[in-house]
Length: 425
Image (cartoon, rainbow, N blue to C red; front, side, top):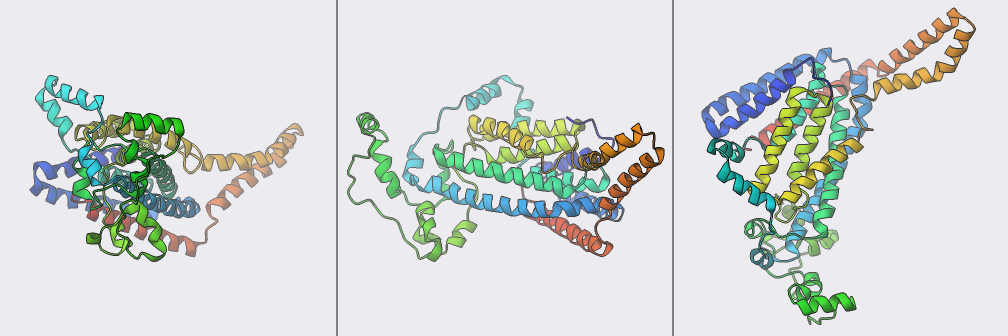
């Protein structure tokens, strides 16, 4: 963990945001008054700091990685969205309604603690203090704090690392939960969220159903390693005309009531039921905590990790996930963040670039020192300083202003959209 920051304003602002937003549960009237006031104050403070920001050249260098990471993340989310519906649709609604949840010792432990702990502590553990949208907003606040020199520039570099790591984590998550389908800890979930057929897909009819419960059939299929049961003609599915996107029909299993458009079906996609191992919510929480710890540190990072632990036990307590889903998400998130330091790092970038420039003149500097040529030493050091200044001023003033304006407008638009779309929690 980095040393505690000299500027503690970011930590105060972040915890104020969490506290004010929690007022929606305690006092909706005060929440409706304080939340707009807080966000207006933060936005005004950011805009005021823009003219004095000194790292636009670093932001410019990070623009392309930022945009590339954003498109990569969107592609990963699209793949995950298709996979979320697929793992529920392939077995049919009847399987989900009739398959009991897996035994989870984490759930047992929390129920036992409810009996042992004082009731105020239990109520705190049950409280919906923080959600997915809070972690996303906390990261936005972290990235914007480069304007106040609370976090090392460039903010776009930090954002690129966050989105790239998120995209890799989402891809790994989709591959993992699609590999082995686990029953939801909420058996009614699939029936309330999806309109897929009640019977299994033809693949499951042939390769899963005949060998699902019969011990002799399971033993024989292991021995012969062939799907030997003749199921006859499988029950077919509705086949809409999706044109070039018709390959998605087998994965998404649309029904007549959902309409003929594959795009409208994707737009309806929300949280899943069997996208369990590992938890996507916990991945977001852990990546936010890792970014906060590395970029800012201090006491507030410990509070963010406490909120992550609170979120984990709530995911288990409310049976959105099994305990293993949350545990795996925590260590996967930590490991993935550690592996993507090449995109942005608190210790790297500018100091490394200066080191590379120094290495280029190192041999000449050593030779000049051996020759006691003080004038040559001065010239080399002057050359080093000039090259550093040139790299800072490599963007033309005209393009720098244009980039500055576009970046601020884009960033504020994203924040306003995120605030508006997640204001209801």
